Length: 488
Length: 95
Ligand SMILES: [Zn+2]
Image (cartoon, rainbow over all chains, first blue to last red; front, top):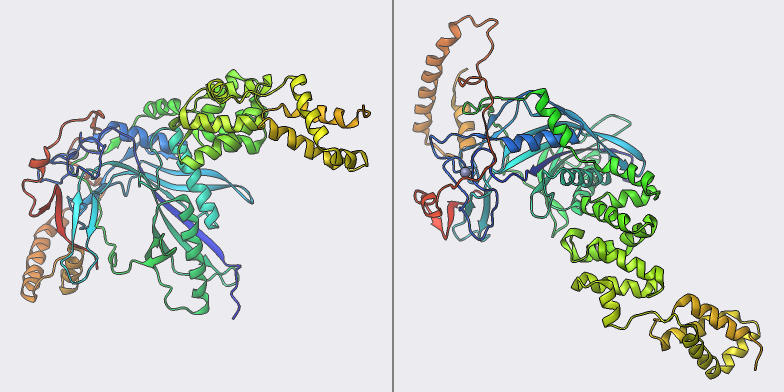
């Protein structure tokens, strides 16, 4: 039987974002934690000791409202916390304080650029809750007594849970959405957006629909997606697996599956969560969160320029193509770097070209943001000015930049130290050209016989002699002159 | 609402507990008694009365985002049933 591939893919996401507050959601414990020193930032509240009283962190509410506004949500003036009950060793109280019936915000959307044009992904809700502790499983052997280790430093860290409507029609769209969401959360400084380290987490719901019959597969929840690449890979894998449902595969049932990045497949977590019965009820220890319109307006006023607006401004103000602008705004740090450079160097398109090629390549190789490197806008600007002055060629400049990334030295220093200064002295170059021409009479003859391509050979030879430092424009011109001048 | 064997078994799974048959019977009786007692409140006519979600006055109480020292690690771990290093040790919930 031939596999059909016209099934409609339906994807919704549930994202958890750790908020960048100094203290936990309901207690004054620090949110800084390292697994090397477990159970150090804990107190009776986040350890779930009886009689402890949780008090809501104002900054967490602010960050939640900020994120909600950036995602075009309606912020509810009345919201409330509920207890979500389940037993797990990383949850000391036996329940998680979350928002169920009255979330902080609802009905938002985020426009994303897909290969088929712009599309709005609706946000169903954004609510606040507390993180669980960290659980480390020990020993995978069945014959030894298994146990787990618990660190409660993470327990109680504020989370914003963002739930989308099932509006994404491909794994690619889910990835684009996640990347954009991360970017926005970083722009507004509420979450550092690190999927690998778990400060941003993504669970996905996916199902397939047969457009002819309207029949739908069971819905699968995919967990453990800890990189942007895996958002796409895990969902592609799952979409392919779900197709088998329409061919009568009885193994495709509604369940939770975890992405295994080593095996590059999803694995059933059946049994682990066979019962989802959270018996929510209102958290009696925490009064409702009642917000004033002015409070929300105040936070609206604090919102920085968001990526989409910045992109439009870059296109107009710097007259750069949309493609450039969208890459430059894909990270707040990069966008700032671009603007700092443009303030000191008046050719935005050249700045943009260098950032999009050389700078981004360095950043990717190092896996860092521009502000985490030794490079500042001063470095790039100095480099570009030296190219303009003819002190160095563009090619040399690339290696100078590489070096600057490593050492943080200024381009001029590097040029000086390594003797990379471009040779722009016509007499000096002419001498070298002459020598090369004299040493290769055969090739000269070929050139003069009409094989004009031979010119490249001479240019290459001159560059070789000067170790790439000769001004390429001048070399070009002088080689041409020498070859075309009448024989002496 | 009636508490029966099925419900108690469901709650056992949720609470990750295993009760003996005897304990289950006792649980069924106790919980039914408690519910019967509380159901008395159902006799009141609460038509048009807003549900009470909190007995605390409906006023938002927030805390400034300032770090306060919690428990010293030793204190925090003083009463845990089992430790390994400075971790709390629990029996595995896998499988
Ligand atoms: Zn605490």
